[in-house]
Length: 223
Image (spheres, rainbow, N blue to C red):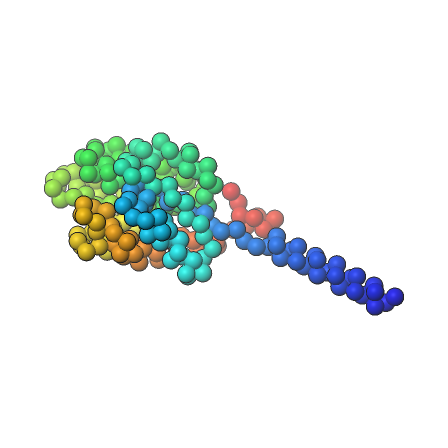
């Protein structure tokens, strides 16, 4: 009788532990990549674009993540702002914002670019979504006055909202023909890898800070 009872208790305990283990499995951290063609991987197979390469690089480092591709080719900061509510419907935990290249190429007033990015960061801050801001640099042919006004946007807004800044998204690939497609603007697969190499430490710091946020008494992170 005692052996049967012990077997029953053992089976019940094993079931309890297995159930607890299932509940304890952490869900992947969802990273929203809000951007334009540089985020969307224009001209590349899906697995060679920015979001997929970033996800793989993070997983290779042991991070359980899912990178949400919210890049739209040709998008401006106004476009990114207009679809932010839609993007937030994917319930991201953290975000990388990469916008402004198309504004710059079209010569859009830097004041308008600043206002759009300001509203994007304000909304993400309101939603308590830790964010990495990826900067862009104005082309020299746009003139000194435009470049000064445009280039100041990203560091100014990073300070305003207390978010980390990756100064230049295309660092490592810009002005290197062998790392770009025929248009000289969009990186090829090797160019994306170079971009990932540069931005990856910034993303891992963002994820580490997110993981260290205070938790509620229930063990869940505050929303």
